Image 1 (cartoon, helix red, strand yellow):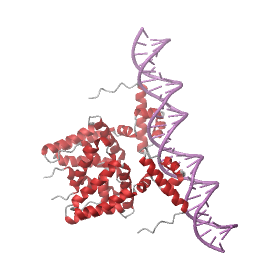
Image 2 (image 1 turned 30 degrees about the vertical axis):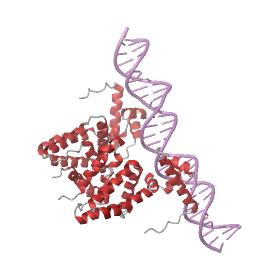
Image 3 (image 1 turned 90 degrees about the vertical axis):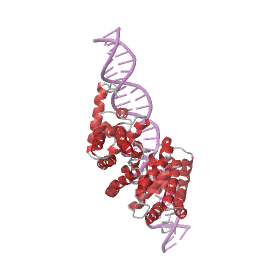
Image 4 (image 1 turned 45 degrees about the vertical axis):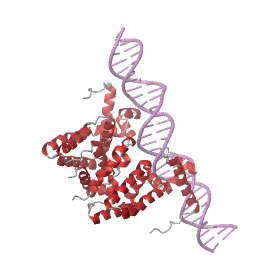
Length: 185
Length: 185
DNA sequence: CGGTAAAGTGGACACGTGTCCGCTTATCTC
DNA sequence: GAGATAAGCGGACACGTGTCCACTTTACCG
């Protein structure tokens, strides 16, 4: 649906790639993710970094593009194998997995969905989630007055969860949310 | 339960009071809440401000002490008049009201609850919420595997809601959460 | 090719947060 | 009241974020 790339100049493209690679390294090294440090390691100025990625989340979204892609791809696959509600539950489980291991993924997802919806075009994640919800609505097991953004908002607690309480709360609250999303009999 | 004050020195007490007052003014003026600006307006150094209130939320919690007090006080009152689930719903409504008008209140509440629970002592808000939940559990209308922190985490979406979508989402998602919290028949 | 206009660059800069530590001042004791 | 001492002060400083704009480079065109 998108016209290739908006014609990126050669040097710009290489800089962009180097920034992403540098970011990947920094993140892999596990420490804090300092933007200007990434710029320095990539051998570019801060201005360059910020032009390519206006916000931290934009950069993260790019770094985690593959992971997000997996999430998106998983939705139809799950729908094919399970009932809508089960598929939704499994998919959310998967999101939670990412959120635990790579906190950045979810932060990026959250922002991406907000931006996409604000631009009146649910992006890939929004579409995946919408597909899951729609299937449930069609079947009558998911309340009809819920959309992708709603769910993203609700599971946002995953970001604020502390490592120590993850085991006791993450899955559990996912269950509570699912109960709320389920259509009352 | 707390031993008066930990014996605050006279000048310290006056500084603390001036900081709070300055913060109130800045917040009332509606602009951004810049910590060092508050310090300057209060006529103290930044160090002083940060010693009295280590984090932004600590300061906000103090500024909004009265509002939080109202929330806490409302819980028993609501319980006396309504069934537990209704009381809980009303109380959450009230929290949402605060969250919309004074975003700072909720941020402060959220942090306070986290800290209190981490210190193994649900603070005032935790106690209020727990009372509401316990009443529902006793009556069998609230699922028993939910605690105050769970609910605070869930309604945390209120902070991330944009003004424009408040009307369409805030109350609505509160309803979804309540449905999840309700005990399955 | 050589010129040129637009795309891109990168580092200086402004700002807010939070820490640190040498100096000041309140309070207690004799 | 004078001296001691611990509590408190406050501004300088270090750091990360994000912006801005004078300069450089690329890609196109005659």
